[in-house]
Length: 161
Image (cartoon, rainbow, N blue to C red; front, side):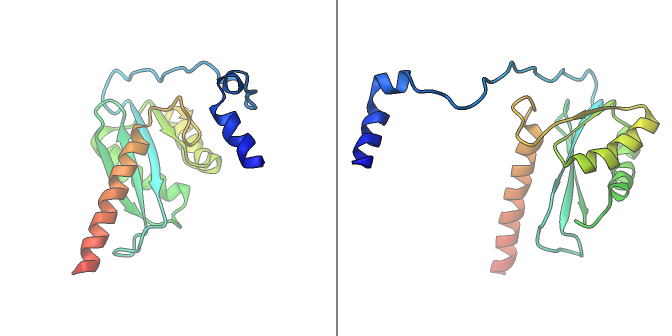
């Protein structure tokens, strides 16, 4: 009987039109402003819990939101926020300088420790987000997926050898 009622309700036009939605109304989306110059706005993300290679088990992903250029910096899951800041300064800052704004969906603890202290001193605007926020551009997540796919293919080829 329960299955019959479920099938009927899923196919009934009247049921579908009058269905009560249990979530709050979705708010208005505000797109991110388009940066004027390359490396003015970057996103920082991490791919962790990877198989260890040359003692690294994570990748720090830094992407320029204007030019879509990315850096994949090998690191460890145990590195502190200070360590990540040093990696950023050594690998990205030396080539492109400091950004005006940084996007990140990492934990609030990371945002607090890595960005707030470092960027407050350097007078950089902080733009934080949550994971899978519909107002984010999704660009970094897309680059992360591509890197994860590459790593899976690479690891499978290495295991076949």
